[in-house]
Image 1: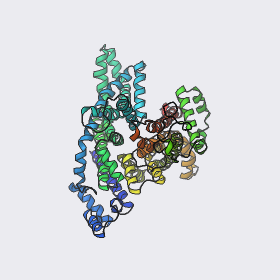
Image 2 (image 1 turned 120 degrees about the horizontal axis):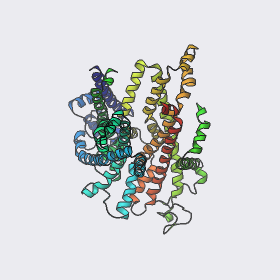
Image 3 (image 1 turned 30 degrees about the horizontal axis):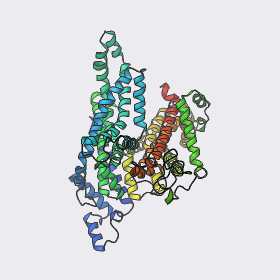
Image 4 (image 1 turned 180 degrees about the vertical axis):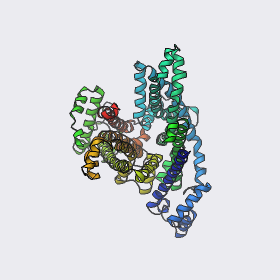
Amino acid sequence: MRFIIIRTLRAFITIWGVITLTFIATRIAGNPIDNFAPEGLSDEEYNYLMEYFGLNESYFVQYISYFKGIIEGNFGFSYFSFQPVTEVFFSKLPNTLALFGYAFLVSLIIGIPLGIYAAIYRNSILTTFIMALAFTGYAIPNYILAIFAILLFSFTLHLLPTVGLETPYHYIMPVGCLAMSMLAGKIRYSRSAMLDVLNEDYIRTARSKGLSERIVIFKHAFRNASMPIVSILGLQIAGFIAAVVLVEAVFSIDGIGNLIVKAAIFSNYPILQYGVMLWGSIVVLATLLVDLTYALLDPRIRVN
Amino acid sequence: MFSILNNSELVKKFKKSDLIIKGGLFLLFFLILVAIFAPILAPYDPNSTSLLARLRPPLGFEKFKVGFLLGTDELGRDMLSRLIYGLRFTLFIALVGSLISMTIGTLIGVISGYVGGIIDNIFMMLVDIQIAFPGTLMALLLISVFGSSITILIFVVGISGWENYARVVRGQVIQIKNEPYVSAAQVAGAKPRRIILLHMLPNIASPIIVLYTFGISNIILLESSLSFLGLGIQPPTATLGSMTGLGRDFLSSYPHICVLPAIVILSIALVFLLLGDWLRDSLDVRLQRK
């Protein structure tokens, strides 16, 4: 119980730290308004904007009211469209979620069986090929992969469209590129998790009992290996913001990645702050969830 | 600390290593030389434009223009010269940025592991925050606030990734803190600074060097993706990422403008990954035995 409380407390302090650092970062270079306001504003308009976004208060007051807003569910307004940030985000969310979800699913369906295969048949030719695939997915940045894919499938073979997400065909390349970068980790983690388990005594026992190899692999080995695999997958979801941003940029997909990049280019801080906070919270909560699940299942962690 | 660099065992292992590793290391050596001697090697000024030689393809394609071995871009700038300077630039940022994150991370890791207690807790909390703050988002935020210049870019990539060093170094320091040679130094009255610098760091140098190599690869990718998104160094300065990003518009009819820098980014990041993998396997004797 003590472990759970301390761990949860730490998670919330981390989220607070992320929010605070983001706030400091956006204010440290002076008044945000000077970065985004067009030149030649009249004093009246300038003051109106200052007041509208609460920028005429002292930084401390701004910080307090920013926090109050977060607790109340008000995350500020976009400097450009004057819409609430949450609204802007949620309008872009479906595209990103679809892209991310499909890619995750594809990499899951392909990656885990390949990883298991590589663990069982350590010396087969296919395993060499699988590990090469894992290395490629890890080593080739996905935007470069995307460029090569566009060149091949769109401009040379004229098979697939390059921009947007209108039809199912539009999904193939972006999802493929994103899945490729997720695939590497899944293959490697599921392989190493399976390898660990396959060396255990109970596997040897199961085999010596005369059980068929299929039952040994799927009932005894995979069930035990799935726990570390699942936990790694949870953490992996959190690590893919960069990949999403780049894939959306290459394929001009109107999603959260592009929103954040545009916000960065035009100094639209409320959007950036919300993006960082959202992503940071996802990472922290995913880690927390994994830790707590582990603590629940493994008493040794609770004691330490 | 530097004894590790002229480690004769390492040389022996290199002689025994795969052809891929050897090829990779030679490619790395070659790329570094090209970057160093860029002003001598580049046939043209990377930013000089030519209206008459715009959008020329590389050697072997139709409309190739003699003198522009790898063709020219949309402003008639020589691709080869731009690639060479872009490589120089990218390598410079990666080496310096990696050095910064190594210094910060190692310092925090050593203090955290050696002192322990509340300081350790605070530093580890900072590490947690940094982990929750994805490098790309932090870079976007900082560039958005401070604008993009070389200094900012180096700073931004430099502070991403320090948490890896901090965690690993802290773990290593805690592990060797109670080794007899450390206790002996303490009993002999050595100051903490001396113990850390002379007794501890040489013993944990291997993982730091391996992390540094991987760090370079990560920073190359981070820097080039930022430039690709248009948030790196502003044009006309040639960087590999921005060449790829701007070349994307010409992908359908003049793919060389985009593909050539992409290939260079790919090979340089790959070479550092290979080097890191190889160093990890050959240096981390301690980790292997455990």
